[in-house]
Image (cartoon, rainbow, N blue to C red; front, side):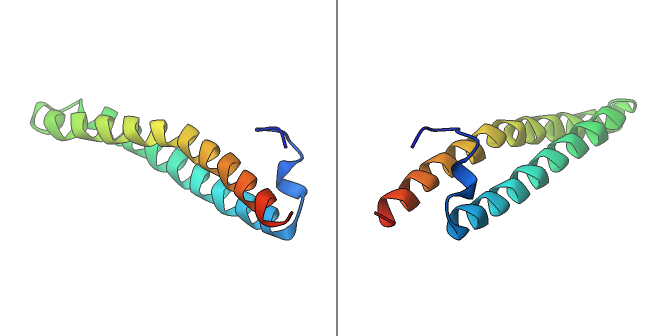
Amino acid sequence: MRMFHPENHNKTPQHQHLYAQTELAYTVVDFAAAALFVIGSIMFFYEATTYFGTWLFVIGSVLFGLRPTIKLYREFAYDRLNRQTR
């Protein structure tokens, strides 16, 4: 099995389930990161909330870093599933 091959998520029902779960996690993380960046940007308009806005940017950045981690996790989980079905 090649990593990041587009057909990996269709091999078995377990692969399809894993794909659905990780896509949901990816989408939630993506949406949360974007929301934190928008809210953080608005907080920068007011000096009293700049500190909290900075923290929202930091948390949003961590979430954006989590995105490729979810995809890499999925690929290793595919490999683990493939070894179990042999």
